[in-house]
Length: 220
Image (cartoon, rainbow, N blue to C red; front, side):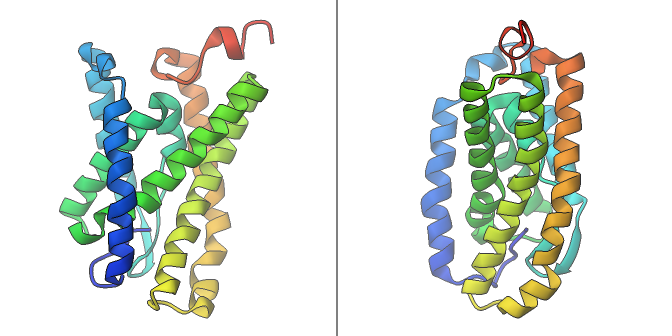
């Protein structure tokens, strides 16, 4: 869901600015910047920004504002926690905006839909899993697979709702040409995030900030 220039009325754009930039500022304030003291931490964060940029450029479009692409929000949130995931995706969105179709005037609204809602949803799921069912399989299934799938569904429906409420597309048009495909996108999104989460836990557990062996594996 990449909303281009000229489709959305000013009130929606102002709402995006009002909600997105305070969230970004809070993420910048809360982020554990000490993790970037090491060269590996710096490379990991920069690599995640580049990876997300290219991931978001692999997309299929229906009409302006109605695009399908993987988000990767679950993987990034589980790797970095919500603060750095928010920052990484914001940097990637800035690069996509610079080189692609969306305009800077829709940056905050796109960020709220593609970053804010998915990251906060996944982090909320993680907190519930960590509190109620700290188990490796529950972590991967609920946070990676299901979290990834529901995050792209939430972003897609929120973006479609903004376009519908702005009068850009009718509900009938969205129901025929966009909304039925969102459940289909949930499967590859969930598989993508879940499989990469599993691989990183197996081979690079030090990259997964939200995962701890002694809590999710030992004694389970």
